[in-house]
Image 1: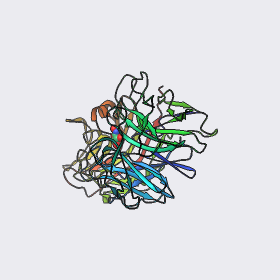
Image 2 (image 1 turned 45 degrees about the vertical axis):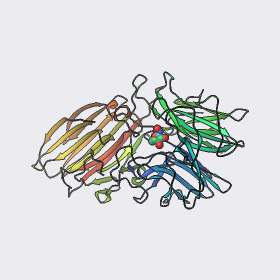
Image 3 (image 1 turned 90 degrees about the vertical axis):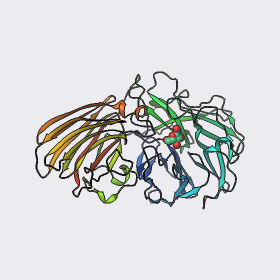
Image 4 (image 1 turned 30 degrees about the vertical axis):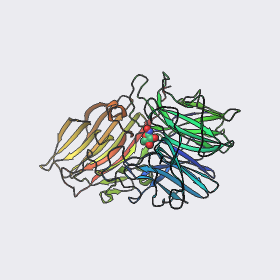
Length: 507
Ligand code: 6LW
């Protein structure tokens, strides 16, 4: 059969995977979004459903004042003796883990680990728990660092020692340790999470090394491979399937075209087969690369990869699919059955506080988003949000002096521009049907107000790409409300939300 990459599309970087019973579980980074650390489940590795988030309470996820791409970095998920552990970094607070015995339930309060660096990972063996991250060891050596911890308290039981220096590429990170065929394999990412990204590994006969690098490192990369739309291949985690085959999930991104070195959907989740040779070294992908589609006989006959194309208020779950910015003020949100009410405050989308905003990741370049927005006070609309400095907003706004404005605003770094503004008649409440259609190169903004079609221009996807905005996130489709310098009493009503995708088939 053939499956296509990404296996989870949209901004879900730094995937980590584990198996428990019949199912696989996968987590990703979430930065300044709340709840934190999206959690997915799959039975077959190619169809993934988000079942929730690991960090759902402010006591686990303090994001006050956190700028875009701060907050929660690469997590690792592991299952050991009936417990799931998720270990990650909150950039201002350091490394910690949470655990649960019920994957559908709540996770514990954070348990801190006093080892620096980012991208923490856990390895369990014979009653010992090894804690890896990148960073600097207690004796000042940079590289992959490891200590043993007491898993009940997070207390360090040994010094943090440096166990591997990688192959010399920049930003050695994302370490994971495994035992396979009597060897310990230490896998990591190098080259930075941009176009030079790659996966490398080494192996040894003890969990703390010494490790001997794989001679053909990088084991997986798409760097320097012309014609490949998929770039930034790196930061992987390994999993053995139910039949004993090994796979790697990893992050990568899709350029907006072969010739345009921009990507706006963020880093997504890809999967490739892993194959061992007779000496027990493994290779990954198709000739060491990740393609858009993978031909394989490892996925059982009859398993079909579904590509969900339609998302509405009715077929999504507020708790599983949506997320907010930083620590939201929940009294400003009323999530109904088929409708949403958002009460605006003085906090606008450009602030590093928590504006009234709720969003989903844009998952494919070809998209059509529609929503009916009814405003009685303040402003409400849809935003194509890369971060607080890069977004396109389509909004209906009630003026205090009476009347309404239908506006399209552009914010690209220091360039803030009111591209279109239409005056509309005064009345107590006005409804606009807002539509944003996107393809790989641009978004098109339209509205229908009282039977009249209004066109609000187009804008390029590349200005909300990572190459322009920087950072680690991807575009969110956000519904938001805001007041003009003050909190509103009346909420904005959102109805008939629909987001439709067409999967990109360029190859
Ligand atoms: C992640 C690290 C990285 O923790 O980006 O460049 C960080 N690589 O592995 C955020 O995704």
